Amino acid sequence: MAAEDMDRLRRTGRIAIVGASLAGLRAAETLRAEGFAGELTLIGDEPYEPYDRPPLSKAVLLGRADPHRTELPRRREIDAKWRLGTAATGLDLTAGRVRLSDGDEVEYDRLLIATGVRARPWPKEPEARLDGVFLLRTRDDAAGLHQRLRAGPRRVFVIGAGFAGCEVASACREQGIEVTVAERAGAPLVGALGGVVGAVAAELMREHGVDLRTRVTVTALEGDAAGRVRAVHLSDESVVEADVVVVSLGSQRNTEWLKGSGLGAGPRGIACDAGCRAFDFRGIVTDDVFVAGDVARSPHALFEYQFLSLEHWGNAVAQAETAAHNMICDGTDRRPHLWMPAFWSSQFGVNIKSVGVPPMGEELMITQGSTAERRFVGVYGHKGRVVAAVSFDNTRWLEFYQRAIERGAPFPVEYPTLDRRPENRRPVPADFPDPSLPTHGPMVTLSGYSPADTQLVFHPARH
Image 1 (cartoon, rainbow, N blue to C red):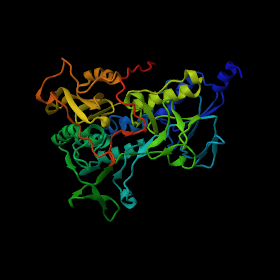
Image 2: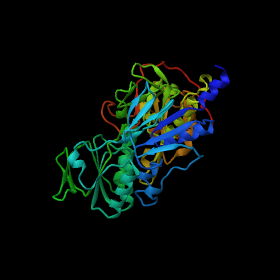
Image 3: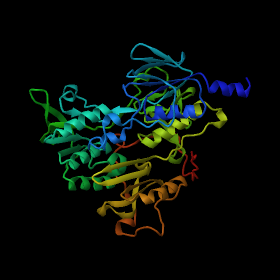
Image 4: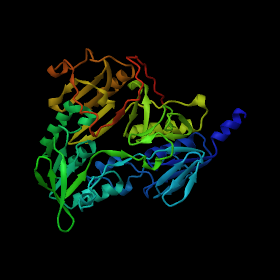
């Protein structure tokens, strides 16, 4: 077949995207922008077109944004068929069909899976159904919780001190609502940033009036005769009265619908290569199934070729664009997904930002500012290399450390510009929890291939 005929085939046919999400929408836009002229179908389990999730735990809870007006802006028309409010329930790889919850099927020539994650529910179903118990993942979740906060609860109880839990607590305190936070680890944010930085976050929360309980777990939620939550029982045998409980126990990747499909999918996500092509259960890469966003696990050359599962807004966009490009281009024109992990959070008046993969770091070095002042930059080291940096109200240094990560700069860092305070002189253990325990941070899973101490110069594609 002539090259021009192959190119025409790649830009026609049928593409289905499962996941009417940020990644799904940006992939659809990229497909059209790069010349895909075939049939495009977007499948989503929620009844809404793609919307922005970060404002849900920030602006929406504070009443600064309407939860029902958080739709993502459209960069271009995508001329797609929308199958909203209908979940995917199965996949037939051989026939090229996605089975839907309404009994229908969608046929495809190429498939992109962008089903993302969902909030991990409270495990005891009768307690989870109590009036006043909330998750926070969807815009309906945010609308319901915002309405309850506006009603002026006596106390909100947050189970879990990851980023979402901390942001909920911050929104409560900003509105003058009493809030208790329970965390099984020794401090907030330890899964994502480690115990040293977590201790700073703990002090910040307590200074803003949060009743923070660490090294405890919730054993039961107690309801009253009318089925409303009234109290929370803890493992230290204490009981806290609360009329709103927010369950913030991390997330679960939406892969159950792929059971028996033959794809390499499980609780950690869907494994794919650097070009976003999914692996089957034998470890063989597929040619017509791609993955993007929170549900994907892909190797990254900068981080020892470990598979990264990242719940980051920027990663979802970049990976979706890469997947869409690779779906319709010639093999020689395909490009790898090499986005630099980055995230941000705003809580208790502090802007927290990070680049790289902090949980890889065994050691941490405060290089600018001071943790006592809540204004600093911390740099993480792994096997003698810089792998991540985090800033509290001090973002101007992050680009510098991103470049250090990209070129494999040595750790500990030694620059003449270092702020030479006592705590800046030497690294300390980053104090991450046992990785076998549940945490709230981005997941990093060993790929089984770890080139030793290779110095890389990273040249990401600029688009």
